[in-house]
Length: 130
Image 1 (cartoon, rainbow, N blue to C red):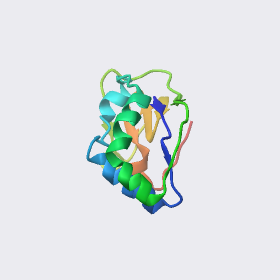
Image 2: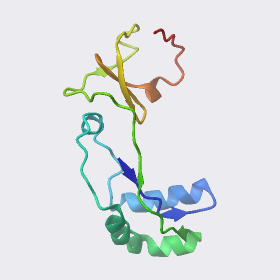
Image 3: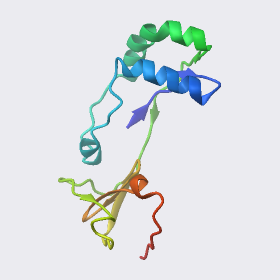
């Protein structure tokens, strides 16, 4: 997984405004099932940046955003084994989840029995034993 910082702004509001403008040209939806199986598409992020930024240049100028010329960042997630089939786990349906932790990718815990979107259960009180 890679990332490329492209702009710097001084408020979260401005960041959101630019994000909304970019969504017109790029989907912000991740196919989480493919991501968790490590079926990721290799993309030239600098090329995509160079194609997208001219489309929102007026807004970039209006908001005083600073263009960045950073290198691509590689993000390595600790995963021992990716699942071949994705089975989503849910504390509302299964209050007791037991399994072997195989990895962490983004907001997901990858267990040998399925995957858990831990962000979805942020306000839950859980007990973890090992």
